[in-house]
Image (tube, rainbow, N blue to C red; front, side, top):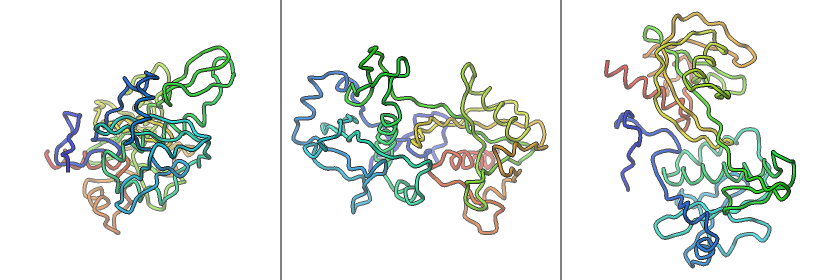
Length: 306
């Protein structure tokens, strides 16, 4: 197996990398922007088409993503060029799909066992196909748009404006105070599940500003000395999660009940118990694929180094 190395120089080698990261596959931008190179790639006998069921991956008996020949591209579908795996061109089909507000629980179990490369390919595929389904009309004039650049852009048939797959920046953070961190839960979480607080970055706002604002808005906690930890793509539907740890002025909580059902301060021992799956822990940790899980692992790691 190829060794997976973090591109983040500060990420501890002892810790698993955040979900959907760690494997860089060749997106081959030089091919997606060239109609001639795309034709050649599509005609290659080894070109492969990713099998999808709506926005969910089809998993083979070996636990990996399933592929078939590009010749099986559905008649009503538009090809999405994913990149190259060595000299093998990889494609998916852009089709009309119905997206559920949240992934079904079984999906978490499936993608948790994917290799780093398969997880990265699936994250890109899901995000881009979902974007095409949500953005079929021009944001400038309202005209119908069509796929260009083999799935990596759309062009309006009316005004000619080009639109590109969007990524929504989201900050996710831990507040730390005197050996404790703050976790919250939303009503839709499973019972006892707590996680790091998070929120979208607003226009004209720095990442650190978003961290401080979201923490104060949701929990009434003021932060300082905010430190970046790591990032992860989150394809539900298409966010870039950026993880931080900040120091809190106090442990007083003023809860925004429109955003959170509850928030609690937990100690290092309580976090370790939850991360170890102890049924007596005061909360259930977020799933390993979520960057919130990575933030907790990172915090425990640096506490152990202290």
